[in-house]
Image 1 (cartoon, rainbow, N blue to C red):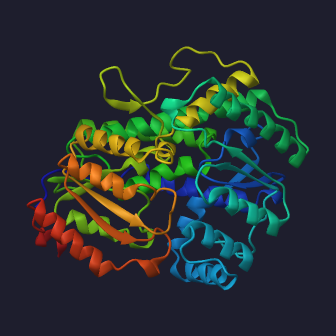
Image 2 (image 1 turned 90 degrees about the vertical axis):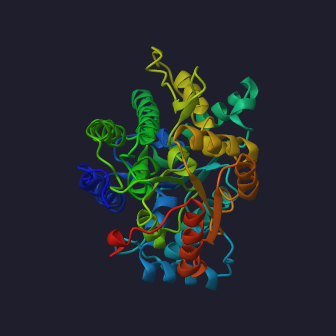
Image 3 (image 1 turned 45 degrees about the vertical axis):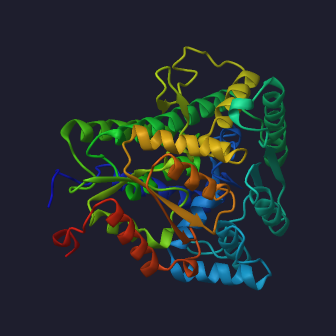
Length: 436
């Protein structure tokens, strides 16, 4: 039975339009006089953006996730990658991107649009090799920023300087690759926009501490992705300003994401994109997935507040810092990115466990669903240590096996049975009126 009022998100259509326009702009960049570049959701996006508003990125992870929703094209891409000798246990996103590139097919139709250059970070075990191969096939220049300098809590001046020096070098690389000069005003604007966007997303996620939760995670997947696409863009930061206002309004009016909310679940890592209906199945139990460290922290930037709570990181602008030079902008930019929550787990799984426990406490989570994601070696690092740490803290945890991009590795019936058992341990029964 419905317990709370609910309504569609007013900005849903705009978010969808922004995503679609992003992929169209990339494909048509050349005919409009712009430049295409390839990279990842974790690339230092503000660097190419400093060369003009007509610099259009294609970030590989959300592009591959979008492919995974098209079962036929996804199968073609993975079959092509495997036929070329790439193993099934490699990053699913990487295999789909490579497959589409080798097929010379673009998700929106036509030939795969070749970038002018590839610009990537190196922290995940697959990232650099992904674009090394792509650059070799596409015969375009590539540049990699090594950010494997340790957890943020251990960052010192030397480690920060190492990253800052690479960012200066990356500007020289883009200048050489494009024939354009870096515009420091555009660089500072882009850095500010990225900080604003990623802090705003964290603030939006904080509103899900409210009962009932104004957003469910399945919906949040379509919202956080805008930052993964182009977080240093004006349109992304401005959209999150609008979204924050709407979610605050939903909280004020008691609008729920799940009308029958009576249980709060947290997930972990990327979901099996082709089977997002598992989140709707949770709703039949009155369970809402309020988010996860992945959804909150893939692009959201956080800090521990003076009272010990987790909240959006305070931007330099909010601190009254005036950014005026290239070096100052790059130094602040490097520090901002090195504090990313999801980068910390590459160095110490206990750091991730502690962040997950913070979310459980602060968002009043009743149980955790951990996806043993065979499709992502990076975000699956230490996942069983995370499960153990949560269980030792008395937090109910379930695991299920799957793959974020390869639907051959997801058994829907088996996972649904595991959900049923987990809900039973939480004392919940299905709402058969809702299920019908």
